[in-house]
Amino acid sequence: MINIYKRLVITGIISLLFTTAHASPWNNLNSQELENKLVKKFEQGQYSSKGADSCLMCHRKNDTVMALFDGTHGQINNKQSPMAGLQCEACHGPQGNHNKGGKEPMIAFGKNSKLAPQTQNTVCQGCHNDASQMAWHTSTHNLEEIACSDCHTIHAAKDPALDKLSVNDTCTSCHTKEKADMNKRSSHPMKWDQMTCIDCHSPHGSMNESSLNKPTVNDTCYSCHAEKRGPFLWEHAPVTEDCSSCHNPHGSVNDNMLDNRAPQLCQQCHAPDGHASRVVPEAGMDAFGGGKSCLNCHGQIHGSNHPAGSQLQR
Image (cartoon, rainbow, N blue to C red; front, top):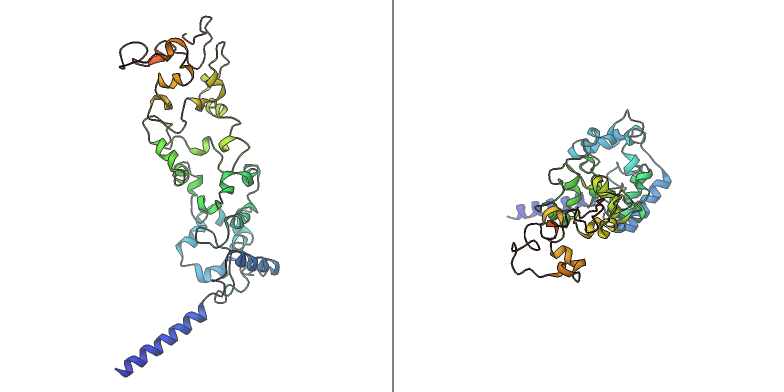
């Protein structure tokens, strides 16, 4: 019994010494302290002469690490790829003494990284600083402290955020309300990936409302629905102002993605206007409540060019 006890104690001491000897001295640093240490490493600039080979001596058995070579960032023959230059250290920083038992930290990305999202993003922006990212600093994603790696997957053959068949899943993993709207009975064909979020929105920000690619909501809608653009001899004010006055572009339980069914939709503006304010006790009794309600007569609701179309009836 005594021998077993001694053996357990000795084993425990050896285990403790082994753990202490191999514990990273920077594990307990907070975000700012870690960033300061990394800044000093960059100032020293001790890059490995062997590049990725030095990293792969330890990390080659990690499938996630090796997946880098399946994607654009891992292409040695592409001069714009990090792998054609400083290789792994182009993104993760100079190796320094990191390969000597992990004595120094490297830049880490993702949700488990201690570095602030803005700090992580500066690495990506070192290369990705073209016109499509010019509005990033004032974008909602940046102000909400979203890291590039929260959406993009670098160590992969295909980045889900850049793949038409998966970009909607990337966006709706956070934008859950829009995901719910997309699955309502009337919606754009987004749940079948025939249309993507980035067809209308710029995830890196823009100078326009809601990070739209086009200057206005209407310009965005007209890029597909050109027949609603006009100009019309008789115009309907809400149509010329903002399509979303009547429609929910992400989806609705009503036909044509309308916010409400007629006549309730129309009565939001036309309530005091003669028969338009009439209360219909039972649906289907007459032209005011049956079928398409107001649209039974006012069918050209987006505008009319007919000489007698002032009421948008023809």
